[in-house]
Image 1: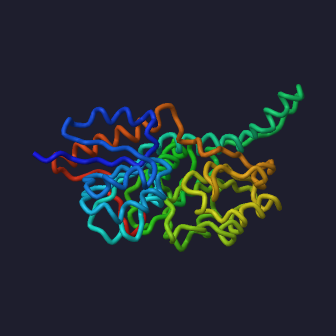
Image 2 (image 1 turned 180 degrees about the horizontal axis):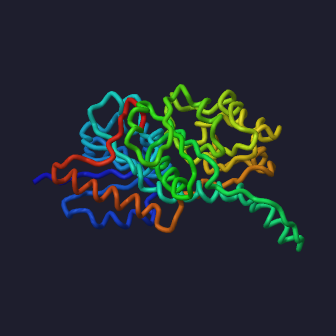
Image 3 (image 1 turned 30 degrees about the vertical axis):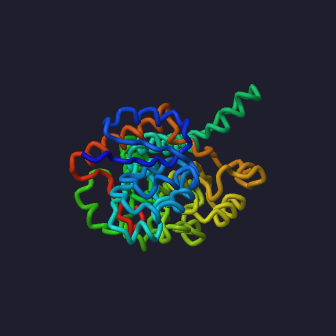
Length: 322
């Protein structure tokens, strides 16, 4: 039986890669982070595993991966793997969709509570030893709009619904919301602004595709309530940063909770650092203990399916980009 050749695009000492020892004995594994390191083996690779931060190397190597039968991304997002060559090829692409959704859903609720209970004010008053009573809000009287009702969007909606919030969401086929017990009202993508105008909290959970870049722009932000809060747990460029900064600085919306940004790490001179109505997370909302191990375990499960000739899980619609 021929041996299976797996090429892993990652730094060699990434701790999660130790789990690859659980692969079958007939798998040859080569790990590298640069084009030069992997140039000699890429032509014979049966499987490509694209690790975190390996986008440029993957894009350079894929045209030479003439024997590849399957590509897997350790990330839930596909912008580093969906190249024109990948889209036009018959090779299936899978990803880690859903692996990080639970933690991101919890972050959304934490952010909603941060604003509803004004936790920044509480912490500041505690630091100042100041007895400062004020009225706070309850989430069960409020609503949440989900832009990008995939695994992350559903995880956020599920938790918000459990707290009594009304849930709005968009999807390409809104008729599919008919039997969804979580969503109170579904909207078509072109109805985004209408949906955002109804919501107290807006969650951007979209994958990054050419169509979703700037999906929430000046028009959508202008439609939000002045008391509205926007949260981004998808990809930074889904929200027009310049439009959001202007709205926050001018207090046209209440605030924002952001885990992802156009440029990461966020530059030290970026306006988000100084805005007191922003809760900023340095892309850590899904960095739970063992998060990369979880993504690697999912790859191993999918590899077993691949080796047995079974259908793969989390196949990406390459033309849609997610």
